[in-house]
Length: 95
Ligand SMILES: [Zn+2]
Image (cartoon, rainbow, N blue to C red):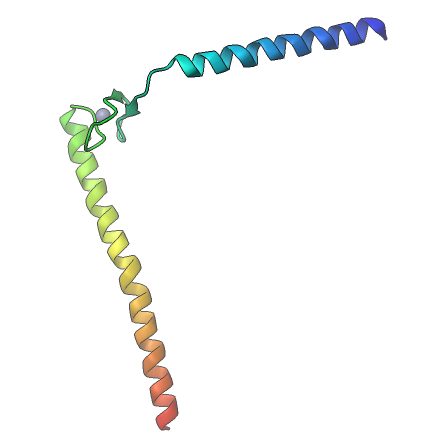
C-alpha cells in the first residue's frame, strides 16, 4: 500500500510540474493573431485578419460576402414570417 501511495505522490508532483510548465509556456507566447484562412501567424493589428497570401485574401473576401448575405437573410426570413402572420391575423379577423 505504501508503495502505491508513493507512486501516486510522484505522479501528482509530475502532473503539477507539467501544469506549471504549460502555464509559463503559455505566458511566454507574445500576443499575435492567426490568418483566418490558413492559420499562419500575422500581426495583432492586421485588418483584414489574413496573411499576405493572395489566395487567403480572396478566400476571406468570398467568406465575408457570403457571411453578409447570410446575415441579411437572417433578417429577411423573420420579416417575411411576421408579415405572413400579420396577414393571417387580419384576414382571420375579417372573415
Ligand atoms: Zn493565410
